Image 1 (cartoon, each protein chain N blue to C red):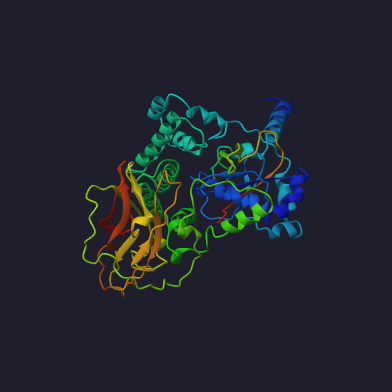
Image 2: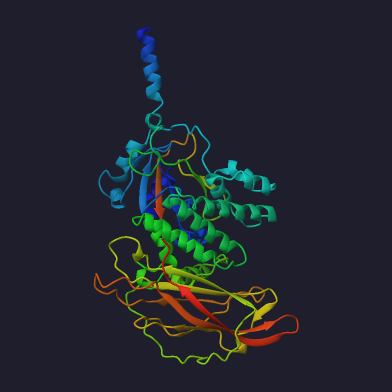
Length: 69
Length: 415
């Protein structure tokens, strides 16, 4: 493979971002794990929310697990 | 705390905050959010799909789902660097979400007609998805499918290779259906048994422990669970907001404060010491018992006498039978064994409901004596005996009578 083509392939793979390196990884809420891709109902009963966020939304997410008790 | 700390970042479009609660009843968290004026989206995860073991737990997630930090403390925001430093590492990656999310709207297809055919093809994910959808306004077929989904999860937990999580989820499903349907005798106890089995297999799972403690004895409450509800309702009314009417009322133990003070017994006379009140031979009223054990039975650290529990009783009259509180005593007499404590040997039931559906109920604390020294021998499984009195009127003619039902209640926790 020509060197410039190899460099292009490498660049492409880097551009895919670190998530793809972990996509085969363990699901969970621990550091380095992938959050389970859950869409759950809202407690208000009005709609659902996807815990990983929406596609192409660049905002990081704070997931606050709590209880009203 | 997190709401105030992140408000500006959220408003500036730099951060998304998503709450998750694992509580059984979503409307309680919804009330709390309204009261606290928190406007995050908050997801309802009663089956604990996230596998959280304890709350609060704050997780920093990169767009697309990679967990960068799993135990953030609010202080991190105010400290130098703080959350902004974490966010710096989180930013800049907007990975594509390649697959549809689990339990999303695509599973809405499970709800609707052709319930029989769908019930044949159930598996754990689809059963949970069916139960997660709002049950308000569903037709008969959809409700039938929810019942099938619950039965599936119960059966799934009966397999030899069933996991602790399977037991927990079977309990969640049973309690969910109990709250949706007309009361069904034994279903609450079945849910408590499922949760107890789950906790016995994984005593370090505090979400599961709290689920039992919610209905369990005061002695076992790390803090009051829902004592804030009356204040929240009052505050909202004063703000001009009408709080939602709940389908499921709080039980006594859910409102109670935790504490190690033992109940001070009140001396009461046995209302029928010679058994002269007619026995309810035809079972005009069913007794629905549920015993929520002290969770000290699971795990090596808490030594508590077996039998210490919160006992729940609901009376379920037959269709043509009505409870008439004015017609005589409505309550329960317990034969307290030597050394046991309860508020009283005679406990009155509370009548709730709108008259068309009557289900008098009560819950009370039962405290077993301290266990003897090690090696003294295992006491026999505790059994509580006594009787229930209820005044009823039967049928169109309105024949009224005071009836008695004797009982024997096994207080051993399920394992």
